Each structure stands twice: as structure tokens, then as C-alpha cells.
Amino acid sequence: MEHFFTIIGGMGTSATETYLHQLNERTPATNDQEYLNYILVNHATVPDRTDYILDHSKPSPLPPLLTDFKQQAALKPDFFTLPCNTAHYFYDELTKATDIPILHMPREAVKWIGQNLPNAHRVGLISTEGTRADHIYDDEIKNAGYELVLPDDKIQQQTNELIYANVKEKNSVDRVLYHEILRQMFEEKDCDTVVLGCTELSLAQDREPYTKHPVTDSQSILVNKTIELAKKYAQE
Image (cartoon, rainbow, N blue to C red; front, side, top):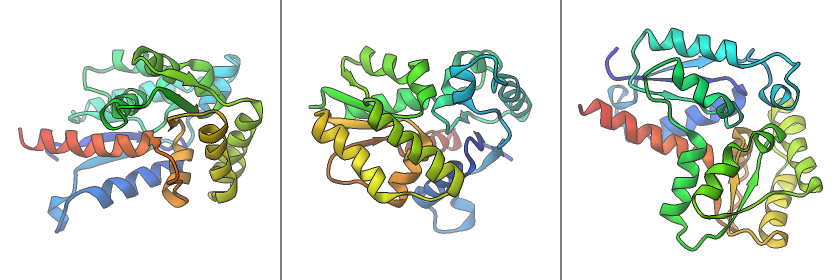
């Protein structure tokens, strides 16, 4: 297969399915042959990223992820995508395992803010506690010159409930809860935009869109960047 990319997904599977759905839906294709070539590695048994980040005595996701990247690198994809925000904690180690480019979802999301929301100053972040602890978004947001706004304990607990009790456990989205989380971030925390720093939150945005204020959907942005890069490689 010529000019393809590899998706290292399955963290979680429902969120990866949303990524694929958006990828295929947004690809400008009128027949089978105009869709993108890709391989999906839906590695659902990768240990929980947040569990490990918060407690290093728990099983590490890094060894299985390294194996995935090394195995797929042997097939020589044009690039990799990693549709799991928390897994970017291991980004530097993963890039050392291959010379094939790996798209950096948090970096692309922050770049998107600068390109599309020029008046944004206060950038909120909702995510897993693992992503909060590993600061992968904090550094990107602050280095771009924005003021980072994090949720308080109440909003974080609501976010945890949405991610784990709703999406991961039941593959469902509590629309009222999701919209209330964002309402608080925008109206009480005075955010100019809020980054969805977890792909389960991106799934929630896909199914129950919040449109009252500008949301920065990291996975949706990754989808667009994936299509852009795949088309670029296909033309070479």
C-alpha cells in the first residue's frame, strides 16, 4: 500500500471510532479510491494512562506503545497519529523509537487557537486528571502566550464522571452534564475558549455539540491535520 498513515488508537475505542468517523466523513471522496489509506491499531488493552501518571507503581502504557510504533514503523507509513491526549505524556520516548513523524495533538490544538481565535487570551482546559498532572497542555498553552485556566475540584469531578462513568463505561454522553461543565468554564471561569483535552470529551462534542462559545476540540483538529498531511504525502 502506497502513501498511508498509521493510527495508534484504542485509548479508548469509542473515542477512536469518533476520530475515524470524522476522518472518513471529512475526506473529500466521491468513490472508494478517493478515501485515505491508513492502518488502525486499536490497542484497547494498553494500560490506563492516567492510572500510571498518577501512580508509577501501576502498569506502564509505554512498553506496549513502543512495541506498536516499532512494529508499524517497519511497514513505513508516511506518519503516525495518536488520538489519545494523555498518551502524549510519552511523546518524547515514542519519537525516539522511530524517525517517522508523529503528529502532536496538543500542539496542533494550541496552534489552531492562534490561527482561528486571534482575540483569545484566557484558555481553559478540561481533561483527565492524568493530562492535568503531566502538564502536556499547560506547557503548550503557556508557551504560546495564553493564560491557562484550569477547572476547580467540582468541575474536575464532573469531567471525570463524564469521561469514565458515561463515555468509557456506557458509551453514552450526558448532554446536560457536558454542557454544564463548559458553561461553568466559559461563564464562571471567564474563558475565551476551552480545550477538550481528552478524546472522550471530543466524542461528547461530536454527539452533543456545545455551540454557545468557541470550543477547541483537539481530536477534531487532529482529524483535519491528518487529512491535510495525508493529501500532501499522496501528492509527492
